[in-house]
Length: 412
Image (cartoon, rainbow, N blue to C red; front, side, top):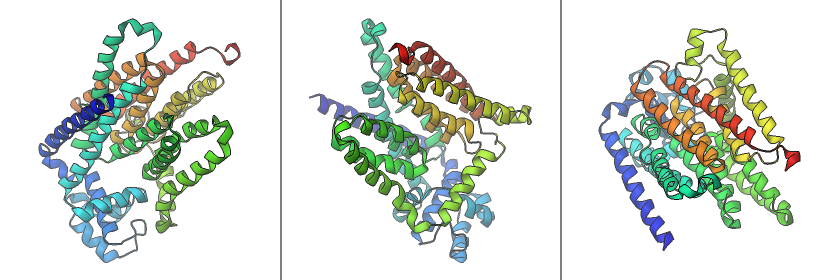
């Protein structure tokens, strides 16, 4: 009975989420020529025409023809930039774009596909909060109230989420697919069913690594799970290595060695370059160009120090460590990109935090929803990154609070 009810809830939430996103798409035709969407379409057209996106010398004539029909004036006018930008995604990401373009290269169709995956994501977020954010004894007497709050938060982070609707639908982005793969991989590793976590989970983890690389942060969850399987540790490790290794790497083979050069140049560029206006460090760089990098590395060092202290305590949960590392990498370390990428780290850090502290998960979820809504309506050159930095500051306070709560390892 419960499974049937949950299935009906899933369908209902999916339809609501999808209809909301369809309305946003229909109400924002000017976003059909958004530069990121045209980059995705360009990459998809390259795949459809059998052109290696990472080898700029591959079929120069056809590359020029594809660029010339771009709906974005800047991209249509600059071949060198078009080549560079359309090669900026990993192979499985571009193969997905190719599959979409094979059906239709219409920008609206791309947005529909993104909205479809985002709607699935919205449903998963709701059930993640519902099932994995558990009650603590201190608030057990308010179970009904907390259940209502969890429902509101689950819907607010997914179906009705301003950050997802703004940064994945209004601005057409594919980051929802990365979030979807990572969240399903997390849900799988929590399963007690061996086939779910070892087979399905390993496969999805590999895909989350292959899609945008960020799934690599979830590896420790699976390694810990395997370590606890004392009787079958070696066997499960081998199965995990084969499934995850193949599903994460096979997509790269046709594009070697060009894709590795792209990955190294993009990663080093995103770490070593000065921050753009949408970076979390954009405002600080504008106000104090000589101090922003000191602030960045000091913040990262603080996080690493807190985590090192937490790791030295038996009870400090690995989910918090993983969420914090992901947040640090996406928001603090990388200086390129925009809010859609930062939201991956922010959303995952909230969901993982809520597993261990319902109170703090609720607080950070509300913080995230308010800050990202403000960043959209209070539009300045630096609003996106500035509000994300505020989120990181409040998240740091939460981590310190958790560290103070946990007893030292020797006392447990």
